[in-house]
Image (cartoon, rainbow, N blue to C red; front, side, top):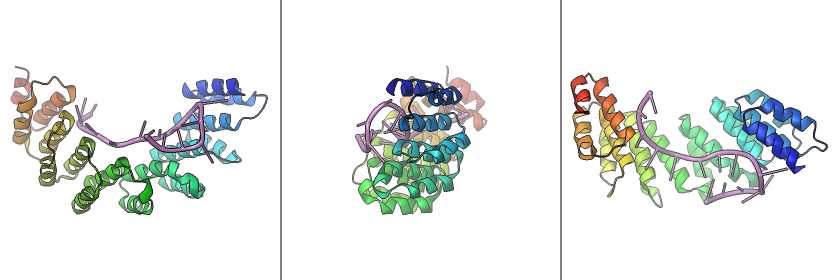
Length: 245
RNA sequence: GCUACAGGCAGGGAU
């Protein structure tokens, strides 16, 4: 019944999976969606074990609950369990779970399975999955793959460039970060800030400062924070204080 | 935007 399910959803959404569970136990008829919601409730509350218990008891798990379980395991770092659910979903449903598991591989730096998944589903590629693939390469220091993949992308937006610049900043590839930044005609503040971070983290505090000066009239929290912490982490305490003069 | 459309998922900057 819809209103019972709605009630259970409300409890689950409020993080109270136990109460949601008791609501469902009192429902006059069992509703597959209600159980699915409960799975999600436990997963959202971080109780992956309880979620999995209910999930496995479902006669036929639907796509949203599969997605939730995959996401929950992924957050847990339990990629094998996530992958198992993915592999058990019928082929024609997999597109829904595809991006979830793909992102999980990307986030945890498992390049090989990410690439395998990426290559296996060309028809599912969007700017989002392209971005994630490039970001993964950049982030883990595979500069060559990052740039060739970037070149293959059918379209670009500021987010791609920002992601890849950030990834390169983490892996210490300052030169390449700069080169790619220079390819962008109209960098926005987020991208601009990312390159400042790249410099600040990789021994280029003066370049970072120069870039900051050009935009210091913009009252942006992150921008200022980046410069401030960049200075203080390298012992430039006077410069940090002078920012506010 | 994606989805099997009550419920789910979804790429960008410091902590």
